[in-house]
Length: 140
Image (tube, rainbow, N blue to C red; front, side, top):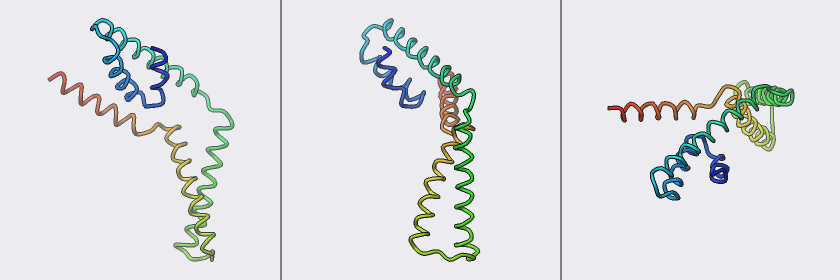
């Protein structure tokens, strides 16, 4: 059962439980075994979330430094791009524009990841809405 859960932890929690229950239904034959397997899977998912919350309770100085670095770099590159494209106060060669644009795109992606990590991503909110809607429909 632990091997099954460790293979599924790369997916999101909802996907992990969904795929895990499918596998449990395929592996076990009796209702009791299936119910026990699903309960164990759910317990492991809850324990995994709990340990992750404890692990990331305090941010290290390195995490803060990376977040600040990417924020400053993004602001600086955006400032350069605004001065070139909008205000036309500086002149850049084509290779410089391409270089700055590609670095800015990469930094924007990293900054988005950092913001999602620090403030929570929107995927969990979407999953919660879907689960609540599904539960309401099941009760009807």
